[in-house]
Image 1 (cartoon, rainbow, N blue to C red):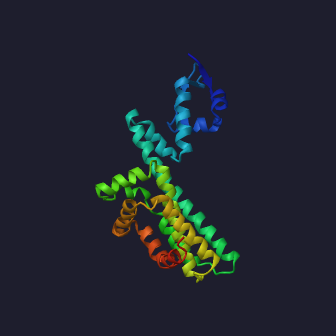
Image 2: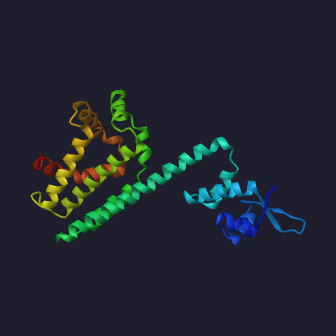
Image 3: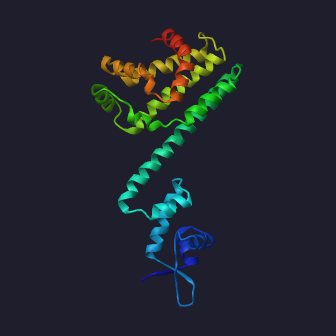
Length: 245
């Protein structure tokens, strides 16, 4: 049976010897001892260490990893799915911040005041949103089937969701900064919205009606989404109508 010293396992795994010793002391990766009392490792230790490295890379704390390693193999899938949702929430929050920076730069570049307080409030609310709340949304069966056909993958749905939030965030910022609806900024945003709607719905009345029913049922939206649309909708409505193709 192949055995590894602390140094050998460290070289193979990229984990420092001090970290391996810490894992051993904390019971996360318990080494065997040879006749001289030195730490030794085997293939199963290497496999377990690769698992630990993966868990760390996707954001688990060491305490969480300790608990995960005790779980039965059939619990791993559920655990990974839970972490995936958690990371997706973080990603959506980061994207909102990026959009906030982008719109701030746009406003600043043409001489408008940046609505610092509004953007901070909206971005903080969106950051705490749990995007997976849509899995509990009470869609009528017909609408559910329409959206399933429309968004073939989760990535497609998230791309639309983020584009929607970006445009409405811009509209809220433009409104707060008193950007004229006749401006180039407003025209560009109105055209982006109309292009998004056209691309997603293909002007299919069934799809458009399904989206309208979601819009009319905002009580099932998250608080951050409601705050966002409340701030951005008045301005967005003006520019969308003005810049219809």
